Image (cartoon, rainbow over all chains, first blue to last red; front, side, top):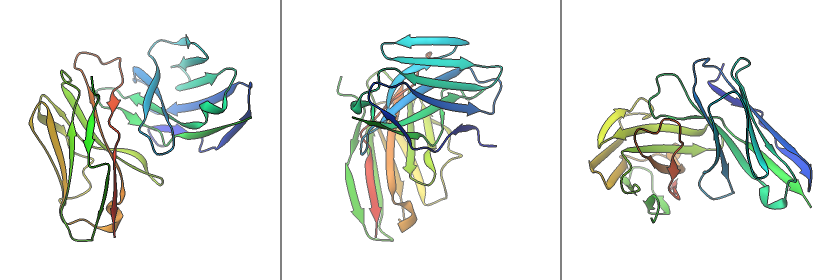
Length: 112
Length: 115
């Protein structure tokens, strides 16, 4: 099992819909979880982080963490064409100090 | 702050040539990371430094790859000799210490093409 897994996608949603992006991780002791957005040809940009079970909201973005089930998700409400990008899940595994392990990412396309 | 600065942005080289990628981290950041990104493998950590000292180089693919951080404001990743399978986007990232809850900031990347 890979350490951090994301559905390969791509995911396509209409403008205004809710986009749900999911990520699972194998290390039960992982403490910190991050979502990065990467536009085509650009570098990853941190958009959310979460470390407690439950939901964390920031504008149209909500990160959800369930440590018992070992998954973290990102919800994007009122999706806009400008949200079209690849979303990378990253996990700081137990004992990893500052190292982050990334999933392969899922590409989101928001249709006007 | 100018962010993490990488150079060059693009590099095209012939197989067998030496390639040097450069990175200037954000001032005050104690950690520096080198990642490689390909479609097939995604983002892979190659090596990272803490206070200029290499901490984990287990991701360096082979002896052809080497990285140095002579001071807090500069790091290099060298490939010698380069091979076509080294073609990828190489990212440098940095983060401050004592912030295990935070992610880190990436540079713009170097797109390497080995022909």
